[in-house]
Figure 1 (cartoon, rainbow, N blue to C red):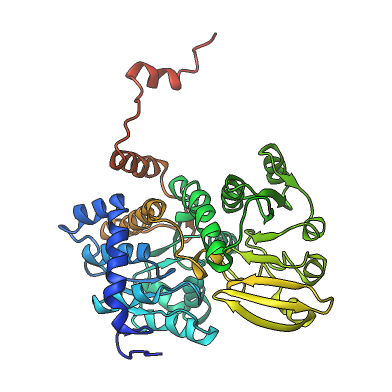
Figure 2 (cartoon, helix red, strand yellow):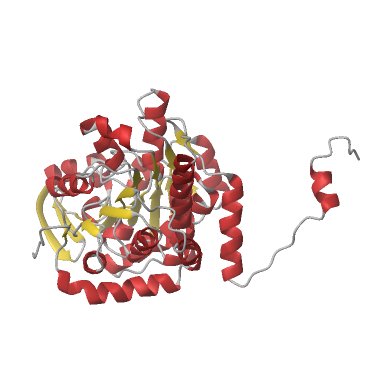
Length: 425
């Protein structure tokens, strides 16, 4: 491994040319973010602000990083998962002048070392996916919060934890819940996670999905997207849930719903998408069929209890990239993908550029709002902030325009009618 010291640390800088091609491909598929780059590169609203980011180093993320930099920001970056960095993209960013500390296959110490390097010089803004950067600031460098005007959070798990922190009065600076924007969670989470998760499973296994019993744990936006794509490929989808309304939605969407104890015995392929630990445990592994395939598409690797699996196994070996075979005491073999890390990024390339276009446009606009507030001598309260609904609609409108799609608009009379409470039958 060729770790370069200095303003970056990546696997191999010679990969930069291939990474640049990937970034250019993503740029061609992200017209909303590229339009924002073109618009704001002239005025450079982020000039004088340092932004530290902790988010999957993909070709799409690179477009966001370079857009922020083009608009004046001093950017320092690390990956938000040990197995989600694309080494070619990381090399391209480093070669292009970005301060970045990221490589595929980091251990825990290297992961947090990388985060620490991005805040050696305190940032004004933090951009997160999973909130590890925010938690590092809060738990290890709370004094740094006085220098930070705000941040943003990309994913469901991170937003849940930050809302809990805010409710306890422990959040030290305002954070935009980018995940909760409609143009993020109803597109990135559903269509992005659905397609990229199936992509990761297929790259790691090359199995036929049609005809398989495909178990999806969790029927939130991500789980719904996975179930939709698995069903579209001919799988028999089974959903496990703890939330009654989510289980009911899955039922009415045509899926079988049962407990994980029941599903474990009949599933062929398993995907967890819950954000909760120990969704599949030792007792579930013991019930599984010979050759069952198990994966996770949640942010953290705790959804599969691999410690209990290891205790039940008499042998383990890697049979192909991102695919580890466990032989259990009962003689059955179980296949775990990407070591339980999020399979869509660890075994594939993550979400398609077209949906990340909107998610990262939201990230850009959230930080623009923080900077504009600061320039006006004002500040948000130390809480989790939702992006304005109007911004959601503006981003969606731009996306439609880039797709060549026109939609209707209300007349003045219709707009009046919408709020006319005197109108009756």
